[in-house]
Length: 293
Image (cartoon, rainbow, N blue to C red; front, side, top):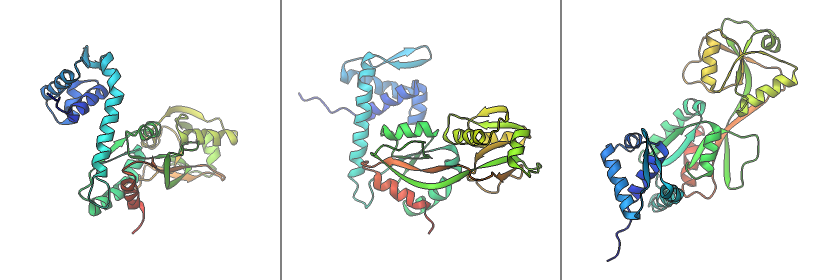
């Protein structure tokens, strides 16, 4: 008697449990009960004839067999998703469109784009994943995201990728609103300094700029997260050199931006996606929402 085809929902549940490390977390993500998730896992294990998940304290982890099939399961799910997208009878491939964004892009660039998208393509769902540029870059290359809006790395992208510039963000000096600045470089040298993490692109650009000007600021804190740094600056804890990021709504009156002496570096924010992706036309249609009408 021929064997019934494997239910891809069970594969999806297995992958989700491994990625989340918990049946309860996977259940919340999938909008299922933990019992339903456990039943799906059991059905998949019965189908493949091996145990795939084992409990480890309050979490779960894949067995040896689970680890062996994980990458294949992820590949199968991507292939099924691509097939469904390609089978669309409309002008664009079917969604959902999975797109990542850095926190500043998500709050500063995405809102008007999403508003236009909903007006023009209300039936195409978009799944948005906030993350750092480094993580988004790797997830696009792995095919886990269709595209990402991120900071262009300080190296050339692989030829398998497409790129579109969306915004140029020059470095600026950020100070409390009450501070008067006549010489930005002197202010940086004199005031307590909040350094933007040197492990990210703009943080390294800022560090190189200060080094080129012979500045060794009095570093009080170093962290990633532009909005977090801006909050510390607004509390009078120091000044910082940051990209001139987009602000949602009215700019904060608690901080003030000052131009740096030229030549100053800029970071480029744009979109990256895989050239050969089935949903590449969908990505380009979304990026078209960034263009003025």
